Length: 137
Image (cartoon, rainbow, N blue to C red; front, side, top):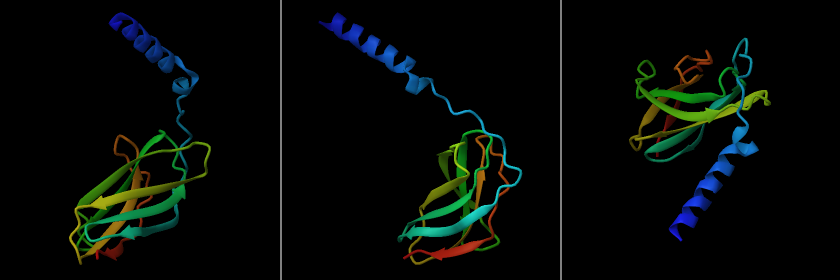
């Protein structure tokens, strides 16, 4: 019985691995000449110890793997903390929506932030926003 079960598991795994769904990899897209924020950044939701920051930019291209980045702090000149969110770009879309959940915030506190996006190697897409602000509840 165990032998049959093992054979079925191996067969299922092999079929899943070689299926067309797993064979489709997203290719790198041409890099955008200039990445610009078209909407935001804005606070989508804020609570006493976390916030969600969102913005939209033209698709930066390059690797399909990217990170949305929020640099924040309690002073507009010291954005020393960083929150990142992994995102997978769709090369078929002209724009990309980025969202980052910023956690570990203090209640009733004003925070300053700026957003950017970067490739997996940490290279910025050059889309750094002006400094904005929000307050936790």
